[in-house]
Amino acid sequence: MAHQHSVGVDDEEPQGYYQLLATAVRELLIEKGVFTADDVRHAIEAIDAISPALGARVVARAWVDPAYKERLLGDGSAAVEELGIEMAGTNLVVVENTPEVHNLVVCTLCSCYPRALLGLPPAWYKSAAYRSRAVREPRAVLAEFGTGVEDGIEVRVHDSTADMRYLVLPMRPPGTEGMSEEELARLVSRDTMIGVARVAAPG
Amino acid sequence: MTAMFAVGDRVRVRRATPPGHVRTPWYVRGRTGVVERICGAFGNPEDLAYGRSGLPKRPLYRVRFSQRELWADYTGSPRDTVDVEIYEHWLEQ
Amino acid sequence: MDEKNRGHHDLGGLPAGPVDRSEHAAAFWEKRIDAMLRLLIHKDRAVMRVDELRRGIESLGPEAYRSLGYYERWIASIAHILVEKGVLRRDEIEARVEDIRRRGRT
Figure 1 (cartoon, rainbow over the protein chains, first blue to last red):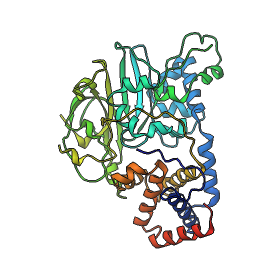
Figure 2: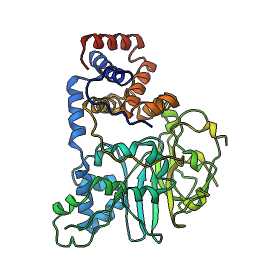
Figure 3: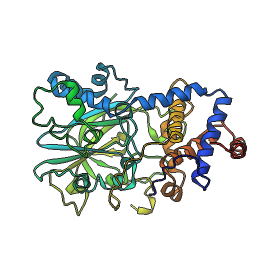
Figure 4: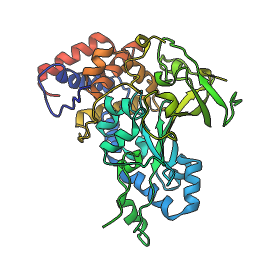
């Protein structure tokens, strides 16, 4: 599947056409009062305001507070909202990496992703190659991301086919004892919460 | 909500190819797994996709499949699994 | 089951090459499409559902599915669904596209 991420004006069909179509649809919807130009601006700002740093805060809190972690694993959305993060109706399931289980998240049918916590998904998550292979050969896909998983560990893939959204709670690496929550959160990348990477030990 | 299946039940995904928008992936149709959790009841996407109400809500399950059982050529660990969300009307015992 | 009946979007388990891990930040026009979809599906407006977006994308056909970019598929689907619902008309969309082309800006 081609990655057609056009930036800026492009005269060649069909990329130019879809940008024009987007503008046409937007203008018409504003004229018909479906939403306002301000609504669109605010919605874009809301998209920009969300990044994996939100998810990283949740992970760091779970690492330092075992009772919070239990609540997070029991009801992901409610626990996330405790931290003042809006989940906008997301049904979040948090899956914990352990010495026995390594979790990996995919949406084989489209691109379902916990956007309220992690922002927009990366292009590779939406790609045909990832969606096809993550369920069939997860260890090979993990290896492409530089993540090896020993045979004795279960690789558990989560296919987001319906209403649940998944966040991986990665394992806290050694050498982080005594770090503050803020310092811990900075160690946690987007890829560790999708499950293609592990959190690296600091230093 | 009365759920037909319980956690731990072995369930088989119906081997069906209905027209329209479905959220049961091809790779699990006709395959057997174990109910890992009951997710709750949600509007039926097969109807929502066509502007219908999607009611009554349908029970949704997470079903865990063994990778070794899903793929004849699976080379990973025999412990490896995949969890898929499947609506009750796609499952049978 | 006949593999011909598999939806072309239903990719789980199909053979594929390596994952292209290069990062592409979403362009402004792409984020604007994402923003529009969120406004349209928001309960305050409830013009469409995300399930309709998905169905619309699946209805684009295998060639379009493979060749269009992610947000191109989104806007194609959104336009189709809005016309289907009578929120917009095809002729007014086409006219506006031409108008914008003449105006020379996106």
